[in-house]
Length: 114
Length: 115
Image 1 (cartoon, chains in turn orange, yellow):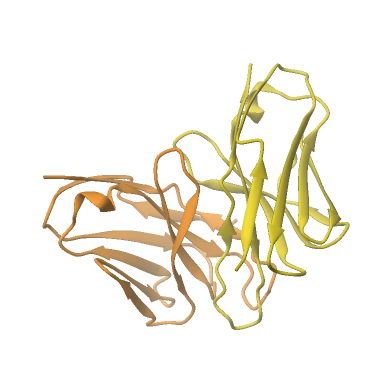
Image 2 (cartoon, rainbow over the protein chains, first blue to last red):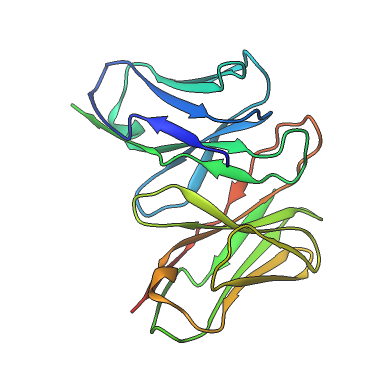
């Protein structure tokens, strides 16, 4: 069974600081996703990473993928309060498939304080 | 552009009652469709997926069923709800091409409370 582990599960950080969220997964995959969820809301897509060494950046968030280590990171630079949310990584179970069956981590609840 | 709708937004049902949740997608054709459930404070669990009309695959044994009567319509049902069916139900769609990085787009969700 595919396992997706995120850490930390809870993160409280001061505005202006940097931090990294980690996502480890247990089997080979060729698609990894990062999503954001605000309280009581649905999921918003942040990044899709396809290949080893892929790096994508949007604003203060940067995601990377190391398929050999089965590790993805979401790096937060100079955090601001608006980044407070829960962040999920998800892994496509079926390498080379177009079924799109995703396994999600438990999420990292991020709180940014002044 | 594509849009995904879910209804109802919130539902409170007694144990043993039936359930029908609906999801429709606009602006695309022949999408893959998915039903996920999110328990409080947890990640998402894939319940069902469909690659075409009438084609449903179940991921976990449970009290629920799904149907896809039209290309862009996906329905989640139950004949008798259990307390453990409570959660946040999310419909999603994608069109995956081999080697392409199309994301899965999620609907607004239905919050179900079974009492």
